[in-house]
Length: 508
Image (tube, rainbow, N blue to C red; front, side, top):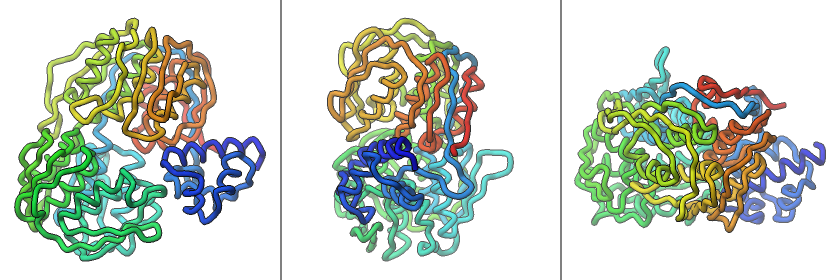
């Protein structure tokens, strides 16, 4: 391994560790080594075997190497061209993974229509298949059929697949009704007491679920019972709300959830649970009243709604390339704050009349972009729980801010360190100043330039860098884009149909 490659890999490992919120000492403990050894690795002073790279990737939930037939994918982008045409928004990634977990509640056949074919879905399918669920894609479609076994074989769970997706935590809600005790693998860097896990455990404790940490696992014991009082979530999180809904769905009697997330994926889960026979009042609000049923055995079909984060990604692609495109099937009720913010920056869009998604509930529009000069907002841009600006849409405002005259401040108060990855835009010409791990300043407008960049180990910042490369005249390379494939289906192919030039090529 050359010194240059050691240094590049060290930077990648350092960034992935910071994204997980781990210190060097904590990563060292996960790997069974010392803090000083991790420091040498990150400084590029340590030779690494493939086995060690794979172990580090597992610990950090980041694909550093691909073993076997699968190879690392890179993108070669020829930028500087305008886009044109029409593109449809795919169905929601976050709804898809929640619905796959919710299928564990049903003893009948579950058919999910028009599901996103992405790596995150593939990982959950691998986990479900390993415990005995029969899963198949229906011919010539993106429809997925799931048929559960008589008894789930949790002891045969595919640990490698489970550790590569945080979604496995959504198994806690359904499984507490299946087994008096069970264990689930958890992804590297995730531990009891961290902000991503503790709200789940505190809420599910009301149903009789107790979880302790063993080496690399959640060890759960369950004595299901009716919550004695309303469950008040300490944070209005999407996945914690989903986990409580999954637990309440098979808990007879009424469960009241307060400070619940009313976000798009939660609403899709509620509509699906209603199709299973669960009664839910208050969908779209922060108070949900759930009347569960002891047994669920129905053949059900459901179509999740479209993804507002993908819609925002496509809108940002139009802004950064100064293009006129029509984005069809935009879930407008989950984009209204974003569009109002863009309007305040001077952007214009043309919207059609509203129509209804295949789930029968979500309001959609077709949106056509109208290029024009943008001005930086006077106030900072920051996320809020729905109906506020979506936290996953915030990174795209770094890209849009780089096109605007003036200085834009983004405040990502939710995630530690994710704002750091937006500084990767400097490599393609943007002026980005990191104030602290949560705040960045972007000065525009930008003269984009081509570059070779290692894809940040975070989904949305990775796509932001890709879209910036579309605007940069010349040829850019974005390396190791597995994280983008986790959340987007055939993004390069679909952008090429709008006039982009993106080539997918394998790594060495």
